[in-house]
Every structure is written in structure tokens, then in C-alpha cells.
Image (tube, rainbow, N blue to C red; front, side, top):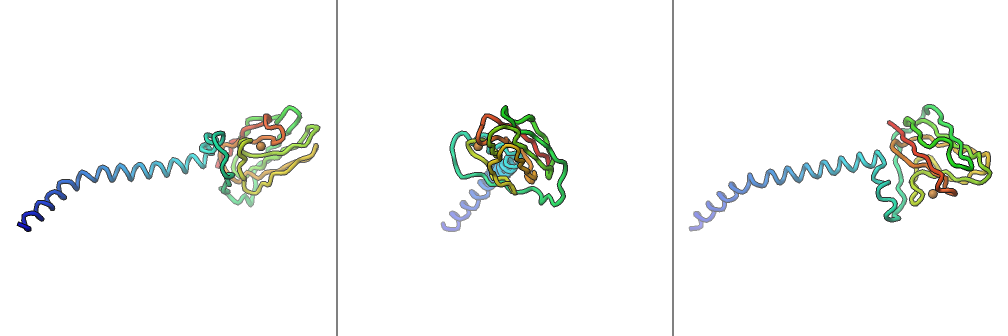
Length: 162
Ligand SMILES: [Cu+2]
């Protein structure tokens, strides 16, 4: 009797076994695609933008994509009383963004949305008096908003390619 029962069990397992394979593969695929997607989204800076207005969590600390021992071209932008004189910037990794306060008031260049600045590697936010220049080595690639924290309606977009 016992012999018969165990035989039935093994037949059952043999029959059910193949059914689990598609499920197992589907699960693996979903996990792999999910991991890939979140990596790509983070690199492109998209995920941050979509969720920043919904909640205020801890600041996002970006990792550098390069040490930028050698820097590329310098992109100069003026931040005046009406905001940035260039609002759609494109750069390559390790280029240098140089923002000069040409307005009559103190300014403060921040990266990311006003509600949730990102911590950009090598850049410490600080107040710029009229005439002062802030220099940012573009060590992390992605699409970012750059804004004047004291007049947050003054913003520009920058795309940094690897
Ligand atoms: Cu801000």
C-alpha cells in the first residue's frame, strides 16, 4: 500500500513540475526587468521627478558617474532678475556649469525640484551675492532641474550625457 501511495506522489510531482517552470521563468523575468527599469530610471533621473511633489522624504544623494579629473567645456549661464538666461542646457559628463548672479539680489543655485533638492556630488549649495559665480563640475549624468532657491520660479533644465 505504502509503495503504491509514494508512486502516486512521484507521478503527481512529475506532472506538476513542468507547470511551475513557466511561472518560475515569468517571476525571474519580472524581477530582472524591474531591476533594469529602476536602474535606467535612476540614471535618467526620471523617478525622482515623478514622485517629488507627492511627499517629502530624505534628500536623494546622487553618485558620481566619473571622477572628472579632466573636465570638459564650460557652460556659462547668467542668473538675473528674470531668471536664467538659458533655460534648456545640454552638457556632457565632466563639463562645467558656471552660474553668475547678474541680478541685484542674493541667489542660491540648487539642483532638483524646489520641494526636494538632490545632493549633487562635489557641489555644496550656497548663497551667491550679486556678481558671485557658482561652479559645478557635472559629475553625474541625467536630466536635472536647476533652480534659484530664493526665487524658485526661476529654473532651467539640464541634460548631462555620459
Ligand atoms: Cu529650492
